[in-house]
Amino acid sequence: MKKALGLLKNKFILATVIFVIYALLLDDNDIFNIIGQRSKLSALQAEKSRFEKDLDQTRTTLKKLENRSEVEKFAREKKLFKKDDEDVFVIFYE
Image (cartoon, rainbow, N blue to C red; front, side, top):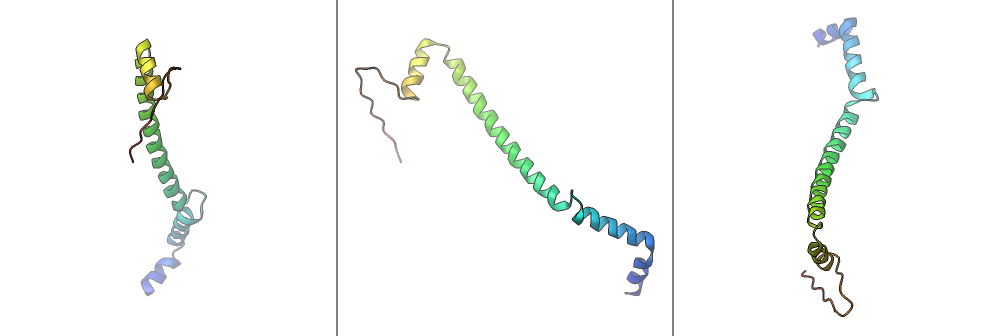
């Protein structure tokens, strides 16, 4: 115990301890802020990868739609378009 008090009497060690406490807990860029920013960054990177996957899928669909027959197939299957003399029945499975 006396040794610990002796170390705290040293002004260089005391200044270092105060600086470390300030840097880790009290500064604008404290440890809690850094952890929160890293979690936001990982969430944004996951969202970015999801958007890139969706973008690749959209580009593939767009490339398919260059053909006229594919446009009609896409409109009928995905957008549920129909001709004037047709009835469309949509079946959803739960």
